[in-house]
Image (cartoon, rainbow, N blue to C red):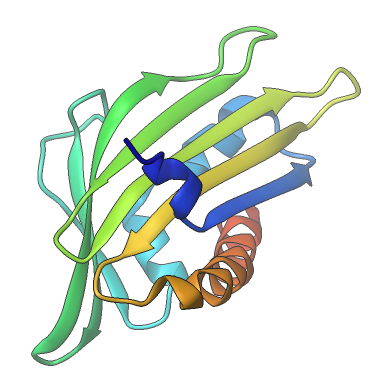
Length: 152
């Protein structure tokens, strides 16, 4: 059986911030604000707040009738606690975008925190030869979104 994860573009980003882990967590898990960081995208929350394992939301990107949805479900929800990292894992459940994403926020002993964003994604219908371009574009897009979401 093939290892499908080995076939998906991998995105890994590490970002340090002066924000404490709890604040960084709050900013990076505000799903509605994520849509504002991606051009032509809005986020639709499908479950009642607060976020928890089982929360479902969709990032809808496009103009007019030409759109695609990145539907996600929170499968791990572990906010940072005193001195321990937080982790949220999203499974992508859309018809076009599949894979998963993890956001881990580690408190730093010197203050602030370190964000580890890991994502494996696949765009159905796109040739595998374009996977490196998808990963490169994802790294640029997500690094920009992280920086903007963490701004005070």
